[in-house]
Length: 400
Ligand code: NAD
Ligand code: DAU
Image (cartoon, rainbow, N blue to C red):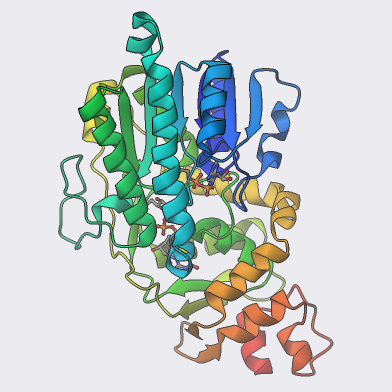
């Protein structure tokens, strides 16, 4: 049996479902169930004895030790983290706690347990640390893609906390011979993606008639990987990766944010046309993310050459599957969009300046703050006849 930390989050829950679909080895899912953890993602495993859920915080050293002794896993796949860059800017403390102290606590518990194993099990044990391309910092347009040898230059508290955890993992191999593997992956997208991140936020805001916020000029570039391809890559590294090594994982899909949002709008225009107008009319340019990295790009040659892993999905196929998934799972989205979610939307977006594609300014506060308080902006402006869920940007501007 293996341990998966953070298995109720976006990538973790996809990994758990994927793992149990392709092999019979049971797993213990250790998750604190923060705002990002959602057991509904794993509802299909309700009667599957191969999935054992433990509600646990990786920062709890005593609990980690007890769990290792109780289950005696053969490997750990470590996803648990605070993962949203904007949250790390507005409140970095939780990122230091979970991503750095939590990884340290987990490493210590795993190493103590590993030292007690008989030789054969000790040699076979693996600790796979799931990390990000953000540790490498930002690229210029003409720079070559990140390789495993690129120097670390993290730019956000999130990226710095992940970089610190990567260094701890590296040191545990170098100092103690602890059998670690590290993966650094680009932006994932797909089912169960929490709608605070660009792709699910765009889909859910578009369907709700809300603005589609683009930070700065929208020309920042990310490399996008469909989440099931990431899960397959992690299984490959767990099975065939060389101990102590790091592996970059990417989708060969560099896209500017504005192009991603426009692509989503075009797919929605086709699958779920609005009564009037196009979804792209909801695009709103808002104040940029502080310290926003301009470009990420991954050279995934090492994992391809050593293990033959390449992504199965193109961006075109993966993004369509993703839109279909969100259209088919609107109840999942509605469950997430509770008061806590709305409070986050207000905190992150309400103070940003905003303007539309024609450069016309509007007050972002009027969209997010009023939604979270349950008042439609147009109601405050005495346009009571407008439906709460079908306002678009032009209508809002007309109201103002
Ligand atoms: P997520 O935020 O969706 O999920 C994180 C999960 O970890 C949640 O289930 C949460 O409840 C759990 N968790 C948080 N703190 C915990 C704690 N102290 N103890 C136990 N569980 C805790 O994150 P994600 O997007 O699925 O990312 C998973 C991992 O992959 C992270 O380590 C992230 O840095 C890395 N990663 C993410 C991406 C991406 O595009 N999302 C890309 C590369 C790497
Ligand atoms: O690169 C891997 C990383 O990808 C992971 O390590 C992180 O856990 C994951 O959250 C993701 O980080 P990003 O910051 O790239 O993802 P996000 O979806 O937040 O933003 C993607 C891009 O879109 C980024 O350039 C910021 C921009 N953006 C984001 C939001 C939420 C907007 O323009 N508007 C928005 O409202």
